[in-house]
Length: 148
Image (cartoon, rainbow, N blue to C red; front, top):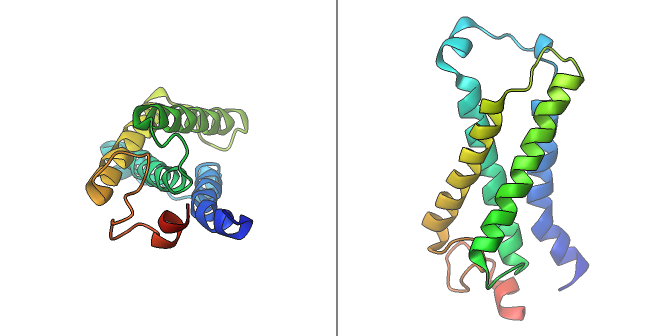
């Protein structure tokens, strides 16, 4: 596979990682947080959605690159562990950088729930768990599938 093709496959996941890092490390002093935010725990929902998007983008990337293609559960475990470590690092950085945020275990749990939701979305869209995107899938990149 050509380097430019690999970059085009990887770049969406890189964009998501960079965006989430920026958003989760943004100082809370710059944000207006109203009482409904705390009352309804909207931040947990944001963690779930953000990590579902991250999990989905990584699942698509690794599936198109055919990483661990015969071991769907190993790939899913790898993605879950990597995302959980990433979420934990973000939480610890929020605490250590003293940006008006604090590290919360429930945020890490919400991150893991989001990763699992990403797997479910992948399954609904592609009909398989992360591993190899079927060549006949409407949403797969046929050029990559046919030339590998």
